[in-house]
Length: 382
Length: 224
Image (cartoon, rainbow over all chains, first blue to last red; front, top):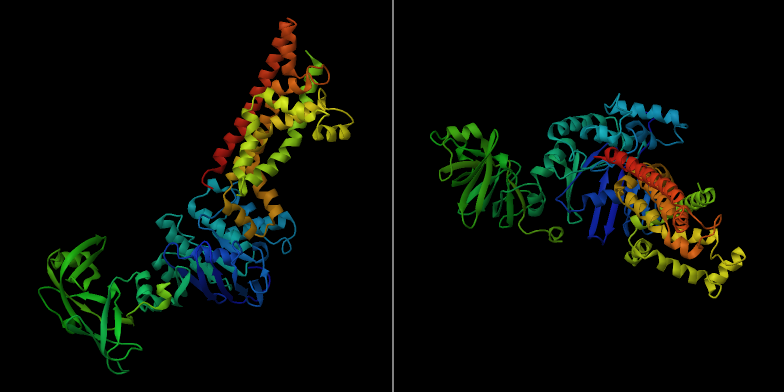
């Protein structure tokens, strides 16, 4: 926003910790990229972020931004947070209770870039405008709403002209409506930032909506990293699939690998399923197949339709949970296999007479079926 | 109106607060922000003057100040004589008796500062000293004011330790509270009543200051 565009490099970090829990994680984030750090509670997301900010000092690892080295454990290099040029938005914002919004933002401005208090306060006002807080500069935190506090925290983080922006669950402390607005604001704000941005969240929808790339952290280790859309539909392992919210995960055997022109087949229970892409697996190999809930289509009960030929499966409805416009349906298959979970429109459920105990036939879309190794990988077992 | 005793009390209270508040900030902050082995012992020792009978504290101070032991000798060498029954002697007594009043409120106020507020200051580029000056001290301010008010009020009212260590020497160690006792013994009830009123008003004023600062903090700190 001020001065010539600076040359910022990508963030690269390898972090190793033994306490308070074991961590061995490598992450990378390119300039201008918004990378989502996801994973269940206790997976180490916040700790990783704190290590990047210099608030914890990992005994092993290296953190660099472009040519600048923030930490190199081997060379005993460790820059304190003050020397890192990092913007960090804390989960509960950590505003200064005794300072106004303008004073708070001004405090983070580099005194070498803006000498003098009045220049700093002026520049702070520009940042407040940028995060839609014009006119609220004189307010202290207790006179601001949750969303306004979050914006002050974002302005404070950016006013430092950081080389990396870190956001620790920045939407968790505000109400739903404010959250949606803040997400839109972040999406438009990031377009003007040419620095690596890392967003920690445990909300997969939030992560896939906002982020370019995702890194899935589990027990201090990176399970998978990749483009956001890709990763959610194509988990790398059964553990990753579970952590990414998949519930339809079943063991099977590859019957016939797919070719570029022809779908493959897998043997599952007493039937075979058509699979558009069987990936790297060979005939006879044990695999697990994963199917997102939205890749299961229910057939109309009275009037069979064309799509029924695609992997039809019949089972009894064991559970139904109405979630507003959608209803979650659980289809019991048999004791050994477990159950299929999918969602249908609530009105469709009503019209079709879908209720617990009723037999229903669904199609498993061949395009959506994704194969992963049957056994948990070594990384999963850690 | 005993001018000498008033002056002695004011000097004693002012000097005690002046010396103890910086000590309270350093010790209170250290106790609030660090965990170390023996912290419980230190905290107990800090509280000890609060519950120890003042005469017991006074007795041990007299023993310590006596020229017969190393501490007394060191002090005698430093000040050119024994400190028992001198203003300096009651100042030392007052400093020790007031330690809990200086440290406790300040420690509590530093403890109330969330760790991530300090971290946010560091990440914003503030050095540790700048963080202390611009973030921690303003936030701990109500505790510091409370400590100062309590120390001053308590010093004005201190009786047992002062009498033990300083005796009752007008113009040197006779404070207002001792003057009340002194006047009553001499059947000068009017003067005793006057001094009592002065101390009552001073105590109320101290409480008012404490109430005003901590009360304001409550509304200011909410939800931050």
